Image 1 (tube, rainbow, N blue to C red):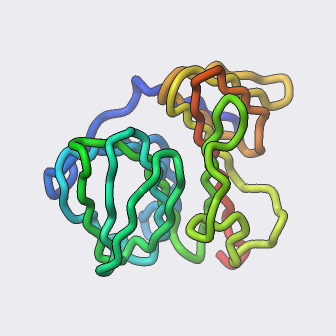
Image 2 (cartoon, one colour; image 1 turned 45 degrees about the horizontal axis):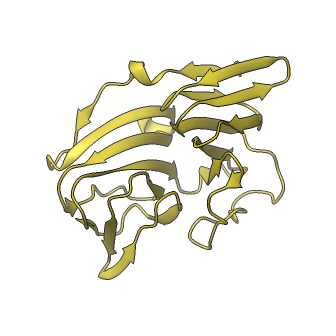
Length: 204
């Protein structure tokens, strides 16, 4: 596929169904029956409340702001850490509690059994988190070590230079680019970028 540049200015805000916040879709890929196969979005969480339910979807959330958020998932609580990806099933009953007012987050959703994802957050000097079992680097449904089908780069804070072969892109805050290979990524000082790798599963 040809690279696709996605400027932040091209995104429209959509209200949540429960009115608790706003969502801006960064990019999505179609799946069977008109459903998305994968979806990347940015959310502004204005009020505490339940998350929408997405059966057979694996979700990864990354807290983007210093204001804290606690998720209660099927009765268990998890305090989110800024810049640290956290993975959970989309069909689980999930409620958000805000520790210090409105906050913002990155959401990556993939249709289970059809797509797998890995989210890494990079700063100027390397990864801002080391990963955990909640965001596995090698989903069991794909061949370990295979290159991703797609790679989406999203500048979360500050400018980032992205290069793939002879092509290059200068991403400002919240700009994104979708590629079919892992590029060279150079965040500026104080910048943060999300590297979202997506695998189309062999079983689909």
